[in-house]
Length: 202
Image 1: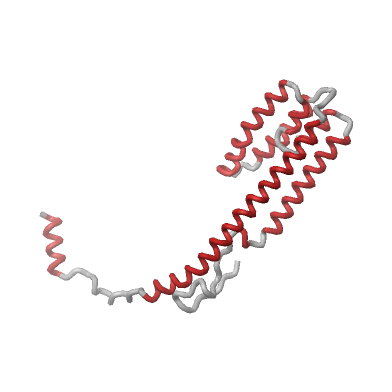
Image 2 (image 1 turned 120 degrees about the horizontal axis):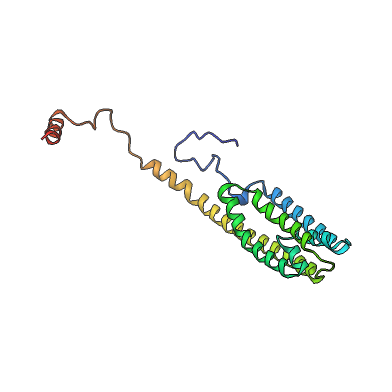
């Protein structure tokens, strides 16, 4: 990332490079592309759930919408227990991801529950589960987008306040700076050194 050389002290944030906040970065387009990719992923899962013939394949497809979603479509007691365990495992795998970089663990949980739903599926599924999970995913994504926009707007206000305050503060500190003392002027004289030596050796 390129930076600008600052010729004068006290003006580092007037003409120089200032690191951007997340809401100012050019990665916003990439974030939007990720959201669109997730939306296509969910729509494909819903389409497969509505159009495929195999109950196992339909349950696995619905599991692509959310970890454990396919287990709700199965609707039996083992699937219900597995769904509860999946809900418990979501925060655990997210913690492992952020704490240790184990991005594989959330993926294993997500796709593992989809395969488990396919294995537990019987001859029929809970048909209303497709509509339920489709509406739930839309609601969760909408809330996440709204929350992110709110945080970005608050960060923008903070950035504007910083840009108004920081240049003047840096210039004020530079103007009030005291020149460095002459080399050797702050060293102890011989009399003080002898006194310190006496106090240390007594």
